[in-house]
Length: 192
Image (cartoon, rainbow, N blue to C red; front, side):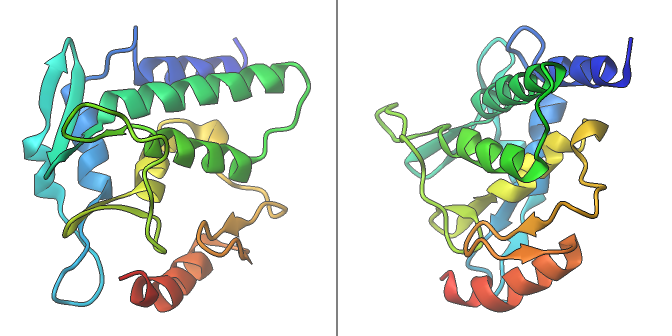
């Protein structure tokens, strides 16, 4: 089995038979949930929200924020399908563009929010800082996606030719530190 076969197996384990483990759902929420309107003026991680996830089926996990619910399991399954498609494309000789993968995964996550009637949003809106806001709380889509990608070595950006792209203004940055500084100084202030 080659490296990509091993990595494909890791992607398959994200949601085995469309089910994810509670521990993984908690990890995703811990890594991506914030108090968006924190008195400090910038979003602050809110890892204890992971205690509020609940099961809606066999290993199907959701979390409610006011009148909206975010389906963690659906987001993982959609991301898994996208990653498997990219593996297939790679095996067919196509190049993998990490920034394109991240962009599509962002959409996968934003499609997994339902209102109080159970109707799904086509694409839940994000703030300038790429947060899906639910009142004073938010889920940072970038952090959610990066947590999923952290399970797969193939998708880590190690090439000097790839850039980090700011999802709000589409500027390119050579490294993650430059992107983080740009987002905190440019978008967090304007995103409120």
